[in-house]
Length: 77
Length: 187
Image (cartoon, rainbow over all chains, first blue to last red):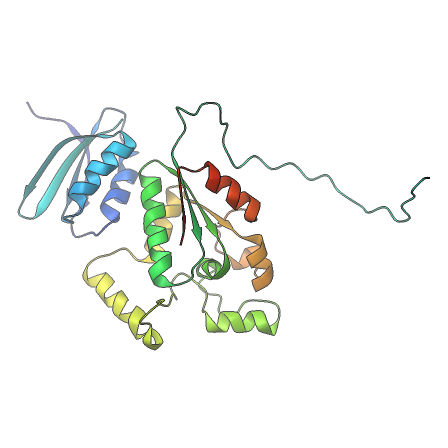
């Protein structure tokens, strides 16, 4: 089964807090229940996206890492 | 005994401002709030204020920044150089150049070498500048409240401050929003 991504955020190369800030701005453009995919290279983003997910209620449904790039998939509350 | 006022003072009706604190009845659904008092005017202190406030707004919190004392000068329009009405106020801005792009470091400033190196490092590691963070913060609804008393003392007018600054207020407003917030910081 493939998951439907509604929007992507490329935060590769950006430092804290811009991956979160850009994701927060982008997630406004999608509907509740839709998915957003974020790519980041900031190692701090692993803890930060988990924390952001808990604070906002936007569920972190998938995360992976490869080639120094972290990938997060979140579902908008 | 009757008291007659010889020259009655002309007063105009002043609308009662909206309360700064939202209705306290629905505590469960209450949005979390962060209040930061931005007291400092240096790069290494204003920067974290902007990082935390923009992240708070990004995390769905209501975030308000009460901007006072030295902290007010970074929020003067960048193109302003010397502001104030008298020589003392003008001296002040001569010593601390206003504007978000002209911040000094609180330590290791070395006549501007420190901030210059910080700028080089910032670009090398792709860290957002205070200006970029300020734009992100205001775009996401961070509210900046300038301190009226500081404005008076420094000789600053509303038009000297950047357009994103809200309605000026005083210490009682700061206390009210701080005590109602879930967290408050003095930086």
